[in-house]
Image (cartoon, rainbow, N blue to C red):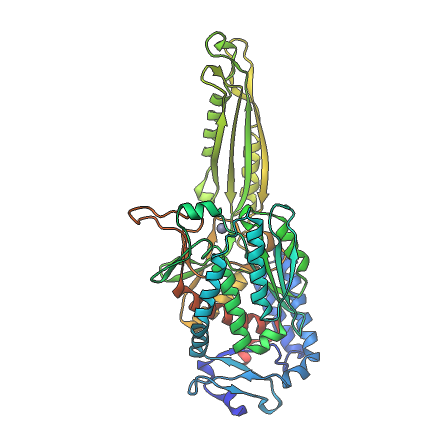
Length: 515
Ligand SMILES: [Zn+2]
């Protein structure tokens, strides 16, 4: 039976179960991995790099102790001719070895897809608008229940805003201390009455499933479930050996920052990666994974002028709206696409009546950038607009005053070597599957912005869909609401399963070239 492992290696996908022990404690193997690591992480990423290094070292050390465990663990060993089979491989005292065959992987996923879609339906049918606390918690309960069947224990962490639902943390400890974080969220942007008004609900049309949260992000949560279930089935060694830490934000759509702390407190030096299951981007047939996201700062400009009767005392007035008009033009002109910097004036209000020179006008908006230096410069440019304005009362030169304040800030997740190293793992897996992936720098925020400094982070691991945050369908059908594509689940899940298998191999300190 052990000879099965010898068949057709070049055509197999070697996925080293992390129970495999031969070579882990070999100094040579450890050194080689360390070297490779140095190449991949630049000096400025020293903190990340140290985390990674200790991860590898930590697992390598523990691998000695794990030797016994490998021998009583069953591995599924597949070969091209038989396509599938369950074997027990001890291979002359050498490492146990799991090999994953593409048709087997796709068969397994295709078999599980109806169950996954049904789980998605149950999730979509629960309204979990951020402000619907009961709905978010109900979805949390369902999610905890489903993952409990995979051996996950749940913990509910109250949001810092008591009006919102609880964050959900799902933990399954592994027999090693190496662990992988997976991140999704529970909430959607759709209030129940909006869903009703637009008849926006679970609806399958061809390859599309319309409905609130179908790809942002309940499809992503279902993807996590499908991936983990498949790893348990096809790579039970990896499933049991790794620890899994799943984090579901109750209020991602409000960019709540306490969730970042919830995650980071539960990461440790053996957390290999944070995998975020926001939806996949596409460029033609190329699947796009998110490797950077813009930072975002929201701001308010308050202009205080001097009120006056518009008929009798017009020259005494300093018109706050006119001043604000000048200010927003200037703010808007700060947008610089060549540096991926955008300013958006999103809201404006002011004045109290048509017969009054207005004394107050307010604008709010946001700015976004990928690069930290551009982001900081932009904030300073905005602040520099504060102080006395140009608009003065004709009577005595009383100036309008401009006050600038920042309301919230989420720092950029810039392109960085740790994320790029993860992209490389997914790209290798994609090559094995015959599909193409590339990195995408995305303008929108995700919880990835809060995590990338703590552990290597990659995003966009969910299924593909379009029109997130939209519930309306135009009468002519040219505009449709949010939907997910059913056909995107299986290939993406295969990609994630395989890439995680590679990650597990790496965390064990095994060079794949030795397979
Ligand atoms: Zn969203």
